[in-house]
Amino acid sequence: MNRSSHVILFAIVAALTAWGAAVAEAATVLITGTNRGIGLELVRQYAERGWTVIGTARNPDTAIELNALAAQHKNITVEKLDLFDHAAIEALAGKYKDTPIDVLINNAGMLGDVPKQTVGSLDYDNFRDVLDVNAWGALKMAESFKPSLLKGEQKKVFAMTSGLGSSELTTRRGGFYAYRMSKAALNIGFRALAADWRADGIIVGIIAPGMVETDLLAASGYRGPASITTKVSVQGVMKVIDGMTLETNDKALNYDGRPIPW
Image 1 (cartoon, one colour):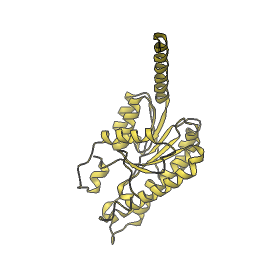
Image 2 (cartoon, one colour; image 1 turned 90 degrees about the vertical axis):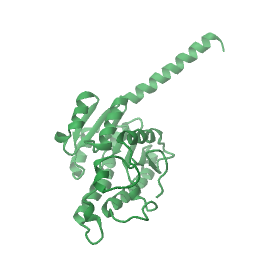
Image 3 (cartoon, helix red, strand yellow; image 1 turned 180 degrees about the vertical axis):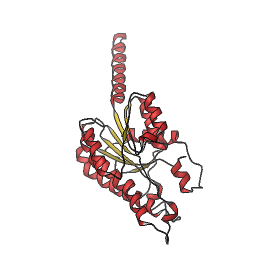
Image 4 (tube, one colour; image 1 turned 30 degrees about the vertical axis):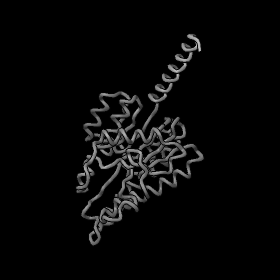
């Protein structure tokens, strides 16, 4: 290959690299539950990547860190959304019906009242609330935002799961009935969604963020192996999202890419 050929090849590679970066920067992600913890860090890292970020919170007025982050980055939009309110989900989806959304991340989650999730003290109103947010809310988000996902280039929708929703990983520990069953319902629901939407080219994934240093983990009373930071977890979650394809989208994966047994 002569010198001029090398120059042409270099120019082509540079152009393709620039095009790839431009596509990534033009991408849009919608994330639920972004007032703190994993959701807030997802907003931070996607914004720093150059994506357009739509972050939802149940009470945006009290989401101090989220609002501060949005003030620093013009590519962040904060929206009010309560996953208990399906009409509100539909209204938000209607607002963005003409907006291509590349990635939808159902991060919002609810642990519920732990003492009320033990046999003999089960509170079924609490049970329904946890199911409503963790399972039904995530499915309603996916269903409502499908038109926007179809307009996006990447067409990806994800939900955050937990090892507590795996029948194979939770054989030695009881309790957390509402949370466990909500995540198990989420897992099977999104696996069915992956099959239903495969023909539409929509990638559906389930990701466990790991034992992350969040308020939810602290409230659970977890005293197991050392937890990880939200930064480390989100870096892994985003890598899994980047690498997910239609060929791998029916698998539940840990933040580090390891498959999670059902």
